[in-house]
Amino acid sequence: MRSIYRKIVVLGDTGSGKTALVQRFVRDSFTVEYRPTSGAMPSKKSVEYGGITYNLVIWDIAGHLFRLHPAFSSDADGAILVCDIARQESVDALKECKAIIDKKLGNIPFVVAVNKIDLSETSKCVELEKCDYTIIETSAKTGKNVDKLFIELIKKMSEPPQSES
Image (tube, rainbow, N blue to C red; front, side):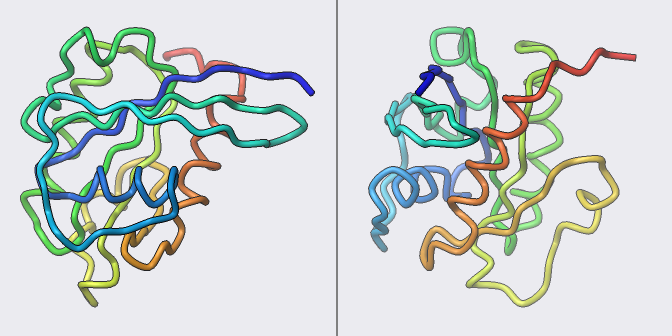
């Protein structure tokens, strides 16, 4: 079986659940206590998709650093943008994250994780839904759609690059 290495950056506002999503995906675990990430924390996981083994290096970037320090983001193959569905400021920060990705990393594949759906019955993502983003509602706590989120990004990274028009 063919093996491919891919670097993924996970970005979003402080407290949006980036670390919890990564830990749920990599270790299938969740912790209730909140400890903010300082700097960046890499994790690794191998996933089989389409007859290929994807060896993922997932960089969980601290919320206050989402402006993408080159040491964390250089050569990224894809990105996951995370927001907390219950906090409008977290949703608003996604547009800034996307603009930073475009400026620093170019036209790389990305997906949006609207996280913490277990905490809110109403979506604050109406504006995001107007964008042409792949949006997946997730819960790191329950595990809902976490694997789907990463598989969707793997699919996007497997497609031929889109030309910018």
